[in-house]
Length: 477
Length: 128
Image (cartoon, rainbow over all chains, first blue to last red; front, top):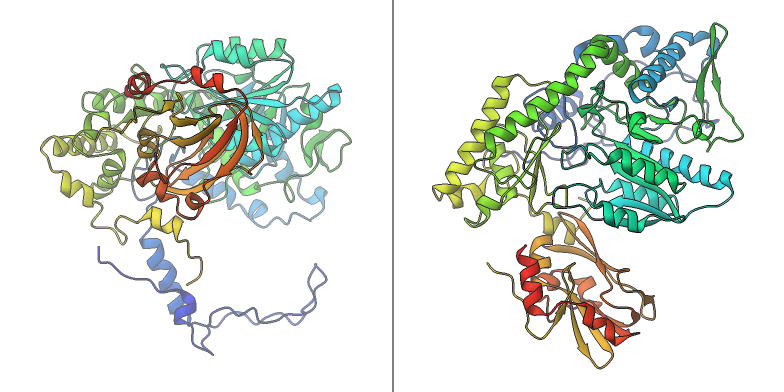
């Protein structure tokens, strides 16, 4: 690919250039009560200039629609086109969030149905669809836990978080006013039960665990962890980012989860990574249900209503009802798969990850040997002595036409490579990827180090000096 | 390249080094730690005068890979911080045991030093 410097719209702006569109409406009055319309100094360009600018930028992008995207922990699965069809039904597409509830019964029934599916799949009766994405779901969930302790009459101080957690977990707990206590992992990548027990006391508000973990391992002690938490009056928050490994197989409620967020944009195939907003509903136990955020959809008689205020609720976290467009897509995915299909998707995701693991673990080091769940964790231990790191391997994958895996995460493994193939990919794609990874390992063995260190060479941008970018940050042009 | 370990220092399992002069201890991160984290882009130091218990979060160091906490190797009060590393975090990478030091603490109980590792013990720990 030729290296083209795409100039900013501001740089190619010339006074007076414009395109033709529908006539502006006569009235300048809008709902916010603002009457004035003033110039805000946008660049002035012709239509083809604008079009070409954005098309060229989009051609520099890599997307799940173009090729395999095994970014671990992100679940870049295919976004089924059936979802897109449903979300474009005019009754959904042209809804206005302020239109009367009586005219939006179909949309509310869709939300109600989605809540029922999430409740059924997790075994947890309380559901809120409001949170905008995963970390927002975490915030909602931890605020619910905070509220529950408050209502019990004594706030607690500490939230326990394993060292393999997503960084958003401790950040969320800190935002809720809690102190974080990190629980180190064992050599098997699991929660260290002795350290966990030693850290648990009547000041523990909650434990935030991702299960299966970011190491791609289902913690076999998870029920014991939940029981210990409950005996101590603490809550079990499960980060549901990896729910796609177990959906339809096991219900989180059955291993003692009190609160969990679900990434509709991961497990339930709604677009993300630049393709659309996320959506992070939370599910909770009956005990915690009264504290869920508002608004909430309820069914009374044959009609659906929105509950906008509730005394016990933590309140409103998001404008209107959340990302409704994602609800249509997620429910479409659920109905398209059915219960057996969702189970099968989880099984295939796990099978794909293990196929990759078993096809690469002779050339790449496996920090936690044995079967994995939906993602496989490797690192660069066998390549390091040759001077090749995880970053070089990731950058070289680009030259082979693949998006790199997640690198340097989870932090508990040095120079981690976290590969999540998802259930979307046919075996042929997995074989191509495995072939590329094996080729890279062979090239390292053959001493082709300097070449690998230069990759990628065929992209619009080569290696970016990330350190300089951060140290000498420039946010203006 | 093998990470450098200084003979005359004490070490923690979280890869901090400690130099003791009287009851003043100088704290930094080891060569192994800086090479694992990668080029630092940000360092957040505590306020002079702040008190910390052994094991508490003392400093934050951040690279393009990750943000990491540096824990207080012993309890005490911060008497001096190395503001130069805030301006140029790369100094921690280039001279972790010298100009890249982070904090000086007046120890509350110097005997806590005995809970730390010597160079040989740390070498074994870092090799794990």
